[in-house]
Amino acid sequence: MPAIRVTYYLEVLSSWCHWAEPTWTALQARYAAVAEFDWKIALMEASAFPESLEQCDWFYRRSGTIRRSPYKLNPGWFETGQGQFLPPSLMALAAKQMGVADDSVRMALAHAALIEGQKVADWQIAAEVASRATGIFPQELLEKARSPEILQAAQVSTEEFRQLQVTQRPAFLIESPIGDRAVFSGLVHFTPLAATIDAMLEDAAGYASYEAHFGKTGAVSECDSH
Image 1 (cartoon, rainbow, N blue to C red):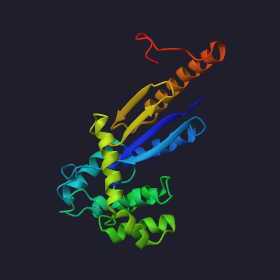
Image 2 (image 1 turned 45 degrees about the horizontal axis):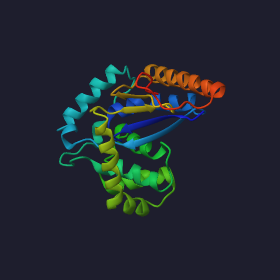
Image 3 (image 1 turned 90 degrees about the horizontal axis):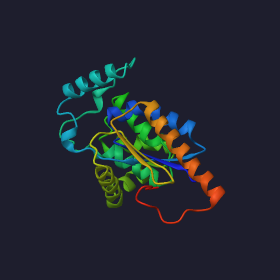
Image 4 (image 1 turned 90 degrees about the vertical axis):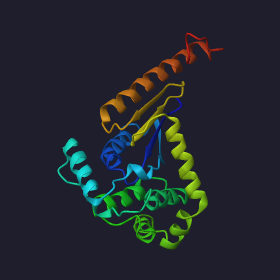
């Protein structure tokens, strides 16, 4: 049976994406045999970032308590005047296009910023963090991340995110082989995402069973959009 597709739209420096990572990891572990997983960059607008170190710290205290976290995120990465803070997200995307397509690089960059407080908005620091996670020379990563093609790729995936007509990251797009589609925006809990995948798998299995007994169906009617 064709796989369920799960696409995770994220911003590397988003605290809520940080809180969603355990769910993302758990989904991949549970559904590895029946789903395809991919992450894409959804850049935040400059206005979505904190305006000051103090405001960033306040956001972290709020999100940390909402998530019942035993630790507080570190606002030390924040610097005023950085606009969209592009280096971490573009560095993660560069590594992905250079063959490191798993979660390791973007999570290393997020950890460096949100846990250690490293100023990964600095291109060189971001490249060094990514290099330690990949073994690729920092200069190679730096050149790739600063290339027009990487920025364009990030802008394309960001536009895909906007086309979902949602505003909150993390966002999860779940698609089934029979055309079902679900979008979750801002949700970091495992249970509703897993329940949606289970429901899609059940429906897809029903269609597979029908085809095994009767063959492929013809034209789809308006009362059966599948």
